[in-house]
Length: 304
Image 1: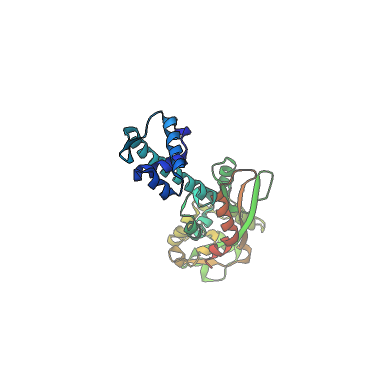
Image 2 (image 1 turned 90 degrees about the vertical axis):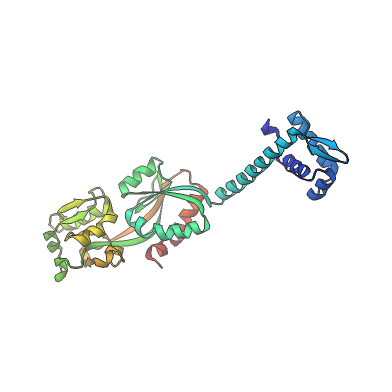
């Protein structure tokens, strides 16, 4: 029966119940008295019971009328909330966004990006998956995330991608590391142990190839981890070397104790993309966030 009730009739009914007088309600609503009389008749016909009874020159609610007032208010509030919620979702300022993010971007892009985005879309919730590019690609194709922020990918029948920003990965050591005592050569780096990402990760593959292309063995990895964000602290506390974003150098936490081992051969220029499934659904909120990433990602990442 509820789906036969007209929300406009319920609004008019509330005004009649509040004033206890058809004429006063008509004046309040800027409607004619016959229009309100028709409203009451439609509601009583739908519900099969009287909603008002005459009292002198006025009217008062019946028991059924009192019950409908309570319901009418809750229905009106629910309807108003629904209209607002759908409008916010359509405008991209409400809903949930599922994002897959590389650790470097999680550390240096997500905080300023979240601040900028949530300022205008405070009702949006973000669920992030922080992982390496191989895991992110798998989750994206499985539909477990809406889009990913990852190293450069190729557009294909399955993926849409856009360049967002660039970064440089370099060899990093603690500030008191012996390798920094003199100008280092590539072969000198092999005298020390390393902490690196798994061999399935692009940066690990790249640094291994640097040594191998010059007839040298790859670095000896003492600690292998997919938690790149742990690397700066590990380097500060040990004489291990690592290969990660230059942005870690000079940070106020572990970065203040880190230094770059400057070598042209071990400086990797890399590109980061935002990518999503071709033909996959992107909510208005997700589209809004992607647009912000494309327009301001580079500045937010660099802290400009």
